[in-house]
Length: 450
Image 1 (cartoon, rainbow, N blue to C red):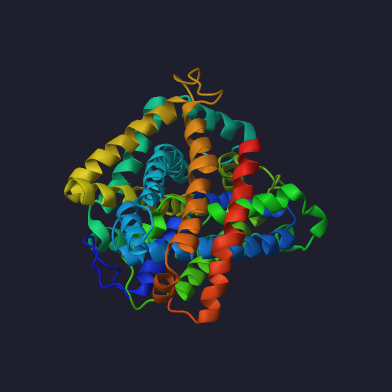
Image 2: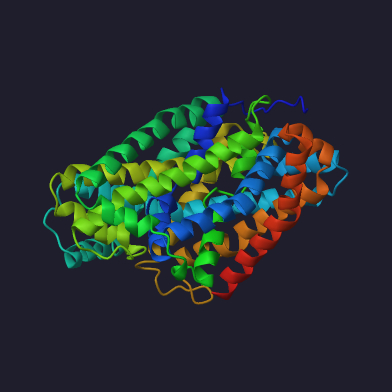
């Protein structure tokens, strides 16, 4: 067992780590993307394939990242250096940490813009703007928001400040206190939304949409979609779980803790679907709207049902909190590294990195208006940030962390950190050495060919 101590602090308990990791994993994708892709790709059959993919990719790589972090007790870059050195491996493996830190910063650049839209929608919903509206009116409201760089800049700035205000306080006073407050609120709001969905009278329709077992809908594309979402949903490949793992208590079980994170992440996504789709069906709308579901379809739905203004506002606050907890985890790895590398305090590191993320966000929000004609390989700046991180940086980060944990880290080290039976450790090694890398490579190639 490693006796190193993190200079950033240690989570007060295993449950705090679980809440932090779940907060990182539960983001905008869980609330609207997973329910939507479940419904259009075979319902229960898709969920089953997704869970198998999580077991084969998500869980072993999640365990690998936590293991490396707890062993190194530092930022992802320095943890990789230390664990590689302890295993007589090349320190070039630190590049995984560099790629992850940069990816997190780039993702924050456009994620904060989308989160800003959610904050704006919470205000508009609360003020009654969407009451009695139709699809065309809500579409016009959204288009007007995209065309207004000033309003988007305000919300992007507010969200950036909210995120860095928690990160600057450190592990115990910032991240830990944040998740202790935000995650219970998120769960309560989710249960309230679920109850409202049940009471709408169309819950059975939503249940059938999401859980009817229809293997005939399981196309090759659907399976690849399940494979990709299983990887991306757990915040893998960007060093977040290495950073969070470095703050994990030594006595906590990595295996059972990772299983709980996977369970909660999936449960939130499924419950969100059962909260959203009864409302969609109650208004006789298309549940396969995709990206437009959250920003066009749902505001119309909430605007035209009893107590819709109240519950619509609560729903967008719920989504905003999910975005907030995820954004904290995007910035923490790079902040931890800058503190260690340049001997800066947290405030200085947060001002520098928060400032960089804020500038990237300006480029992202201008992509929809004044900078829409500035293209990179045929994509605007917003889409370019999304494409490079999701299709290149994160899959490569996940692939190499699996190879590092499976082939470079000495079995003795991973077995000590895992604290599992020899058989369970051997099974994890097979997954992380062979199965997970192959499947991540398939996701990587498939995304590049799209």
